[in-house]
Image (spheres, helix red, strand yellow):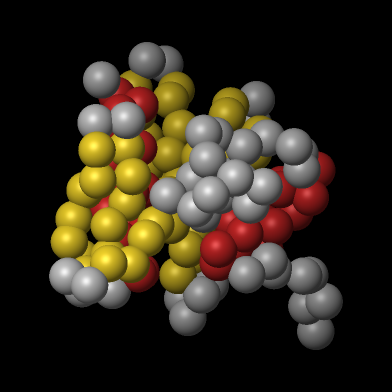
Length: 119
């Protein structure tokens, strides 16, 4: 029986952790599959891959203060907002959207941040 605690999706997405000496960014979480899509840069190349949520939870517990921007910083306003015409996420350049669901907006925000990492 695995007793490893796995934090809720909203507490993992947008978080940073160290693994194998590299900084990793949690793009999004698939609770049903038990995996998280993460990105990191190795040898100057950006890599995106899935890892088990239990591994992410253990890494986050070991580095609880690493947070990128305000994507998952709960002490600041959330970047995901619902409006009458759909879901949006905030960027320095303005709101992006609309998206049909909050989860679609969160995934798009993760993709946006990933693209910004490689720019």
